[in-house]
Length: 159
Image (cartoon, rainbow, N blue to C red; front, side, top):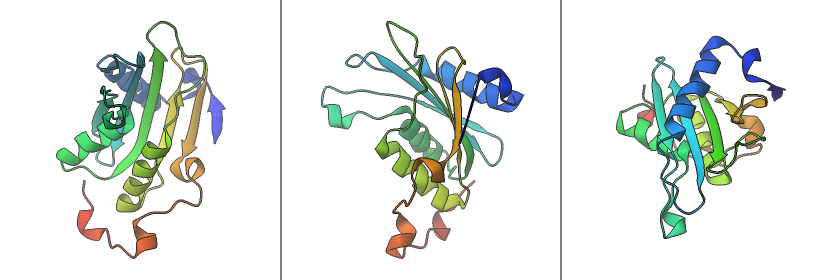
C-alpha cells in the first residue's frame, strides 16, 4: 500500500480517477448526501463506471463499486486490472480518501478470483492531495471466497 498525491500517479491512473469523479456526479443520494464514483479498468483497456444509489430501505442501497461491477457484468466484462474511487459529501470536500466498504471489498475480491488478478484499488480524496493505492489482497487479507468452497469459476471468466 502506498500513499501519494494525484500528481504522483501515472497519467492513466489520473485519468481513471477523473472518470470516477465524473461518475460521482450521477450519484443518487438523498439520504446520506455522500457522492461516490467508481471507475473500473478492464483487462481490455475499457472503462466501466458506477455511482452510489440510495434507497429509503437503506439495505437496498448500492455502493459505487458494486454498481460498476454489476454494470460491467451486464456488459460481459469480468476481468479488471484497476478500480478508482472518489467521494465527497454534498456540503464539503473530503480530506480523507474514500475506501470500499466491507461488502464492496468482498465483491471486488470475488472479481479477483474470477480473473486471477489482484486488483489495484486507487482511492482519492476530492482535491487529489491524498491518494492511497493498494492491492485488493491488502484491503481484504485472509479473504474467504468461492475457491474456499471448492467452486470452479473458470466458466464465469470473461473479458
